[in-house]
Image (cartoon, rainbow, N blue to C red):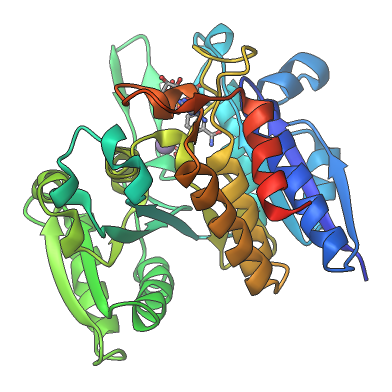
Length: 358
Ligand code: NAD
Ligand code: IPM
Ligand code: MN
């Protein structure tokens, strides 16, 4: 049976980087003598313009009928004045909710080749390898009530979690920690928020099922600092939705560029794959976007949805090789010594395929 991949490229650099990831996946499937059927549908701003909604019904139906969904990015400055439920981002949140994946895995790692790119000293980031497990369907993003009451000049959102929602994401984080260095850091704000007290108590309770994993708790403010001071201290980092959004972008500093970071969302009906970065309107349409985060996201599709672990590893190795060979997109060439070859988005994608022998 062919592997059915739905691609929702979205806005800004979304289509530019997704194209390269899809080309890599198609090449890898062909070489492995496996079939892949790629379907494309609209989401986000492009869907608002064409379909008057950020998540058209046929996109959702196609997503639910696929084996995996690869999303580029959504959002654009022209939509900034819209209320949250009408914006491109609402389409992303809706597809996340409909697909049901609640555990968003966001690896953040130091590439030796990119050490020069990080404002952090090489000896600080060297060997850092963190896996963020970000809860994706709860917290402030989905809690009600939520409203901006223009007549009273007040607005509110609700940070809400149930014990069950914390248990299920915590179990996934502990299981992943068991396969890594068996350390789990749970991030909260339990010194101030009841919802964080529930979070901490529940994570503590789930920890009893995983005696081989060492659990520690950190407040989110301190964690933001520790991550930059001692990134090597962390293995799996478990967070609620908003804290994970913020800390995962912060961790791009360890890798050297937001354009390098992949993500996979598991636990629901269909896994959803998205690079961590957004639609980057500041560089869209210029061939400046780094497609490696999207290509590494494609590697996660191979690993977590297609059962093609060795192919996933080969894509990851190819990305390292391309960096070793001195090829860079502009975000990776900043402040770097000369001798690097700066490539466009499409050239970088082609280089990865060349190294893979595709
Ligand atoms: P962003 O991630 O789009 O960009 C932040 C900075 O990183 C920009 O300077 C950008 O040029 C750079 N950058 C991002 N990806 C890059 C890449 N692949 N290569 C090179 N440089 C890259 O975040 P933002 O500017 O805060 O948000 C822009 C829009 O994207 C907003 O509408 C936001 O809501 C949306 N967004 C969407 C997603 C998603 O769809 N998954 C994620 C984050 C932000
Ligand atoms: C991300 C993005 C999204 C989020 C936005 C665009 C809804 O920032 O995937 O990190 O906050 O989850
Ligand atoms: Mn984000």
